Image 1 (cartoon, rainbow, N blue to C red):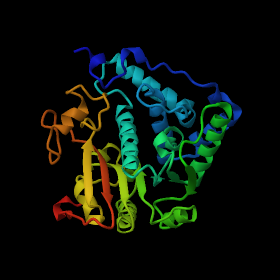
Image 2: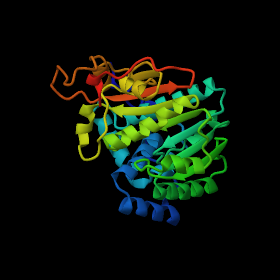
Image 3: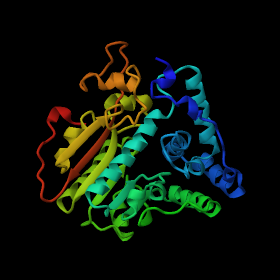
Image 4: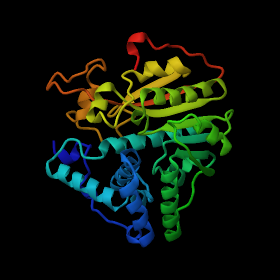
Length: 342
């Protein structure tokens, strides 16, 4: 089979040409990105890297704001990696896992809101450079809350102001958008969220994309328990991605929290229904994972209890995409067994 037809690379008619918009070279935007490069830590900068994926995987993700939210440095770095992967006929093109992750979250947000009749609160914890409030029409009846560090939200707001002023057709798609300056590692983020207009008793979709594994075990569990407690008040949906233990070894100084069995963990803290997917599963490939020999398909065909790959002895580094829900009239049907603790 021709590698270009295997589905986890760029199709030949979508050559990832790097076209940098003029907006990136204006004085205001350059100054903002100088601040990012010089002052932000790895966690904050990862938001720009994710935006770069949305920008360069534009044949599957429509995000007209992604380029300006990513910035020249991160766009060039990712483009170089993609071109190198294509030249080497790599089975996993740089960015594909984040592209699939983005599409999975998009599809689940839309499906959940559709099941709720369209109206709900959507809370993005560790929102980073997320632009869903501007690009997902399914949010038109929803109040969106973006929670992140104040310096991230300030720079992001300034970048968006420049982009919206220079482009006629870009506008807010959500019913409302409120930015909440808070550190979810601290104890006061829920209080700050409520001060910003969040209502505990309203149906809520909580989105934790690309964030939970940066937290310590105690911090992550505190966040998850706070969200889980809302199941006793109203219909609550959690959309999150979890690393298994092996994945945290990819960067021991960066990744901390893990769960090998999040589908066992979440029912123990209040969620009555949990569905877990892996990259490449029917709801998590989006036409990008057809090659049966790519890393993700090889992993998902092994039992989750297998820690090292039998072919080469490498650690089985997995990313789980998890949808969990609960409401006051539902009871938890499963508790986490002790051997499945995080």
